[in-house]
Image (spheres, rainbow over the protein chains, first blue to last red):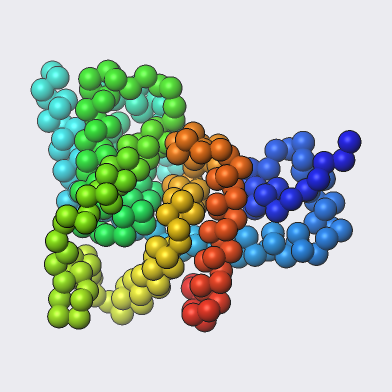
Length: 77
Length: 193
């Protein structure tokens, strides 16, 4: 039975979550259909553009958390 | 020198056995992903700091009281707590006053820039702000999947379990989130780094 390939499969491939069993079918679908290949390239491009964004908590927030951990540890002891 | 990677599960175990430094390692390892996710969900740095602290305080209290049962991985568990706190905060936000300057900007958004005002940092923050604005224009359900998949690095299966949504629905939401973001980027002719 031939499995029909959808954009969901291509998205899973771009995010490294495609089940191994579907892998060959998805690759051949991408070879046959330029629309699939284009969607895959767009997904990778978006991943790369989104990937730049990262924020760090303020050091005070981290200090509050570790202090709470320390306090609760001291109480437990 | 190569530092050996200790899995989260091992760190949790030794923390519960009394090794306090294990929590510091977990916080250092996951703080960026958890904070970025919270920040994108609530779109308010000041509130995100509060939720970040509260998330880890709940994590620590659960571990100390023996409520943590090793049923899941650390990050999805911590993000589940963070997400619930973020949802509560968004619901309550209508009642919270926002302090703005004369141009209507949230004054708290300046606080973290004061420490380092180099030009490159300002440009980077402008790029981040543009991207954050795009993400915040997405419908909530699309934004949630995008943030949890891309920035928190959860799998679609983990997102499905965390949000109580069918996995195919999660994938569909991600699909539309990427399409909508791409349209916004093309429309504004902004090329992000």
